[in-house]
Image (cartoon, rainbow, N blue to C red; front, side, top):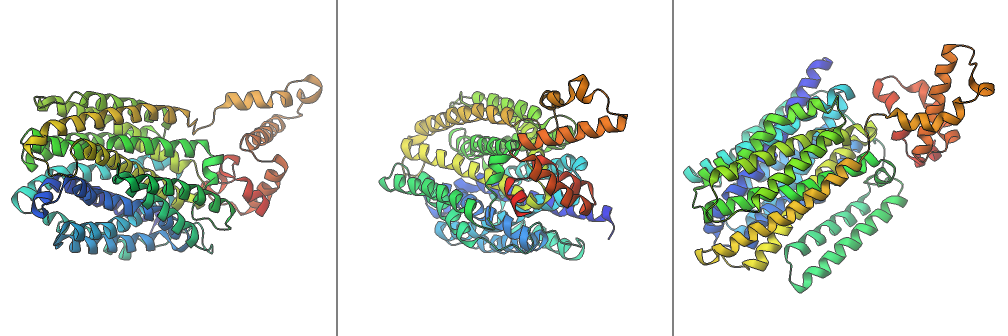
Length: 541
């Protein structure tokens, strides 16, 4: 299979995978009130139908990202899609809320395998100059799934049943698996031969689970114990990853790569502030405004439609303009949309809600694609699986935190009782308080988006740094030849860039001259630049 066909097949598979996983999330959100009535469960337990999926995905993302780098990204992708499809069938025949939540846990693990590897495959196949465009398409597929979820989810729930929502994605899952087996030739590994860090994975999973479950049961006495356990567990995980020979997660990336670190933090904040919007408005529109699931879905589709339309445009734009600029503007618009939703009451016009959601969607589109491009373009190709998993982890941790905040607010204002007309006033208060919290989150996220630094080089700092080298008649006025002057400037820039990235110049140049003879592609040469090298690599070499 030629290179062009491989690229198109990878894009098709990644985009289809990016479509069905958010479709499942958003369609289930719109069906939650109906599920709650059938199983006669309260609002807190009902929220776990959504939260369990996110929790399992977050626990799984980091380990499966590493497994993909070791054993092959396509293998893990196919296994994940198979698990996702199988558990969709099982969820459709669930007999109670606990059974449904159990199947959703395994479905979330499958979705983590799909998301962690799909973006990594795209980044492996497409060169840097094309990456923003294709990542924008993949992100657009996510939002198309989110768009179709509320609309078709509401329609299917109203005219068929909520169980049909799980069955409708099964043909998509089968199609993706067949395409991967027969059309996507090749395999992509970035850490072949490394050992899998099982201990680190267990510590990470335990910490994430304890923290998330603790947040969900606030203000119960046990909650603080679990939250503290989670925080301590995360610190233990970081310490372990710093000393283990083959870490499941490259913690040093956060310490040495500011663009990567702050792009991930910006994603965490943004998803924390936005994910629960559809859940809250689904309850508001159906309980307070009296809309049917289908009508509520039509209103909620406003946000993902804007995301789907503008994400490819934002992705292409980030190939030419600094991603942090576009993402920061998007974060600001998202904050404005959340602020508008604070004013919700029983008499709020539907057109006002739609406009707020459209503004929210436009802002998120400008943020997401450029931010993902910044993350994937800031790391070496051997870290693509880890970086892709990091994107997914930040997204899902943010989504869990968002749902955790909502769960806490609902528990404080309504309690563990079913939502009835007597509790409608408290439901409105809960919704408004949640949007106040989310607005503060998103406003703070603008800082992380701006502070990440430039993805593309800024010569001002370099020029200032090499000034002592190049200024002075007796030292550098006469280079002998223009080529000599060019070579000197290149060497001085590399020296100062190495120092800026906490590398010892001598050790870096020794590493560089060892590796240069084996570089063949543009990505190979790019991986040797100082900003993509960590100090531990120099000691190993």
